[in-house]
Every structure is written in C-alpha cells, then in structure tokens.
Length: 477
Image 1 (cartoon, one colour):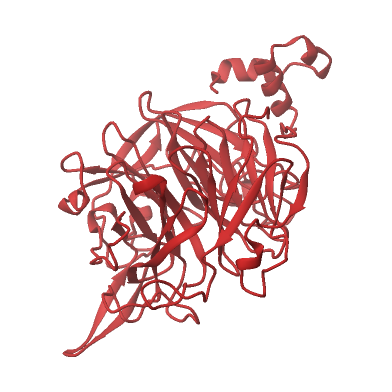
Image 2 (cartoon, helix red, strand yellow; image 1 turned 45 degrees about the horizontal axis):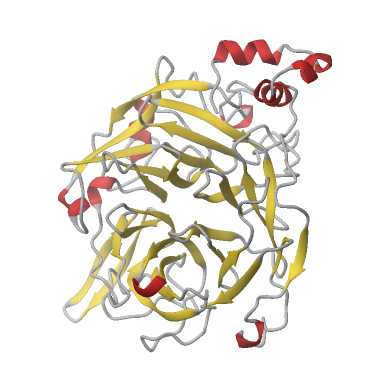
C-alpha cells in the first residue's frame, strides 16, 4: 500500500463530497486525510467462548470464557504459569514474544519469552544460566496437530526482561533483553558483574533443554524489543523500546545459515531519512515528542539510508556524553521513533511498531499517542507509515507485538490501559478487532501462525497462558 507524497497531498485536499467518486484506494487515503480511522467489521462480532479443553485447565481458569472471538473460531489454552513442566520445573510467568516452527509428525514447536527481571515468584529455572541474578529467559513447547500440549521445558535461563524477539530462516529464535543494566553472577569462585541489553539465540529443538547463553554483542547493547530477519540477505532489523528510540539493521559478517553464525559478528546501522536528520523530521507526529502533528501521512513513503554505529557495545547510556547506541545514532541523523516495539517480516516488508507515537491523546503537555505501524521495504529502501491510531484509541490502543498472517493481514497485540484486543489490519489498511481478553486487562503477546497457517498461537501475559486459535481464516474481512 504505497502512494507518493504528491498524490497523497492531492487526495488530502479532496472534499468529502467527492470521496464517493474516488477509487477504493483513493477513498481510503481521503478518509485518512480527514482524520478518520479506516475500520472494517473483520471476521464479525466477538462473542464469549470457552476453550475446548476447559476441563483440563487449572481451577482458576476452568469453566471460564478466556476469550471473545468471532463466530466459527475456537481455541485451546495450555502451559499456564505454575503448571508442572517436563524438565521438573514449573511454567515461568510473564509470557511474551513467541514464534512457531514445524515439528515432526505434524507438531508445532513454539519458543516463548518470559519477561522477568531480577525477582520473580515463577522464574525461568535451571542451572545453565547467563547470570544467577536474572530470572528471565525462554521456554519451548511442542503442540500436537490437535492443538493440545505434548511437552514443554525451559530453554534459555539467566537473562533479563526478555520481551520480544523474532524467528530466523535457519530455525532459531532470537530472544531480546529489553534493558540496559547489570546483575551480579554468583559462582563458586566469587561474584562477577554481568552486562545485560543483548540478544540471545535459541535453537528450535524439542529435546534441546537449556541452551548455552551467548550474548550477541555485535547486534548492539540497548533496550531491545524485537527483531525481524530479511531472508534474502540475512540482515537482522531491530527495534528499541525507548521514548527516543531508533530502528537498526545488523549486517552479519557472512550470511547466516545455521545456529551460531550471528555470533561471528557484523556491523550495526541505524535508519536515517534521506535529507532530514532527527532534529528536523521526527517520526512521532506528536509535538510533545519533538515531532509535528500530521507531518508524515499514512501511506506516505520516505527514502532512507543507514548510518553506522561506532560503538555497538557501550559501557553506559548517557545523553550528555552521547555514549549509548541511540545517542550515537541520533548524532548521525538517525530517525527517532517513540517506543519501538514489535517487528515481523512478511509481504516482502519489515513491519515494526512505535507503540505510543501518533497524535496526542489529550491536551496535556506530555500526552503521548496511541501507536503507529511502519513498514520498511528492503528492495526499495523506503519507509512507509502504514497505520496511525486515532487520539481516542477507540480502534487501536498501544499496539505491541505484531505478526503477519500467511494471507498478508497484520495482527497487532494491544498493551494499553484497560481492555485488550488483538487487532487485525487487512490489505486495504482497515483495522478490525479479532480477539478480546475476557478475563484480565493483561496484554496479548507473542502472536504467530503455525507453519501451515491454520492456527494462531498467542499469549496472555498475566496470568500467563498460551492459546491456540483456529477457524475460517478465509472468510471476508
């Protein structure tokens, strides 16, 4: 969905009376120009539904409709926090980013993050740890063709604040630490300071157990959120969850084809809009965040280039001394995004989210927005604003994780205040509500599709549940 700036500005001046004479695409952009959020009924009205395996769930969940879904869709729920696992531990809490991979005998293998810091009632347990002072990591699940859990175990331990990440074409999961901090690692020989703020690679293996944690330092030390891998080149695109974050590209020294190749190093870059440094073109579209209301339009494309980060593994983040990765990037003119979060590759594009960018939600001097979805086209070196939430947040409120369906729709996991939805975006750029969290105000996270495209897997972070959803995906939206 692309349109030139000249074409957009022409449409923006179109009066409401002439919209009906426009083509569907032109009508869409004219609607956006009037400040309206393009919406669709999607798969239809949502209704309360029990999981089909409700009798197998813990007493706190059994007999409760966890989700509201459109007519014709069903789901199962499994691997809840505190439940015994096959490695002798219990399921950690704070389920977050996740990806799905094909397994033997029509099974699906899931690798799932747990966003935990240094103190957790239900940590990621195990002796093979990056730091004894950190409680986060990942778990691996094997799910049968009947969408029932077969096996689950911890697969990465001792990392911190594992928020999102992303799958690779060589069947690994990159787990991202959303922090820039240190912990103390206590060993038999004493204690040592462990640096956090890295990515870690987890192999997709139903029998892996805990993997050896190796920080991918060349990919940068910063408050990571998610990654997306462009399969043709093996370049890894990275988001950063900060109010003044940047969007990064990691170019490996050699095209990665197997687990461990990323650890051989590479070069880190940040995205810059050609002809505009971060002080003259801030992507937030919010005056409170250094942007300008409506400066970048939905559907507008911007030509970009990349600036190299001199020191991707800094000792500190300091705005005064300009030592952090994002400070180095911004000094070179990199574009600024407000809270870069989810990222996913699909439709030949890298999609990523700025979760609290967009027009301010109130007249308060520090009011933030309700979120944006961007796409980067590696073939054309173009950046496009795909979706921008309205100030009311009525149809989209703080999108976080994102995935791309096999048929091209985007699915966004909300992480705002109050009620939470999974929000779809169809090929026309219209948003629709697909699923509703019916039990808590906890965020949706980790949405992804099975390799055969028939099942969406997703987490509710609190109280910690993984869900498998299926139904008539080919129905009109």
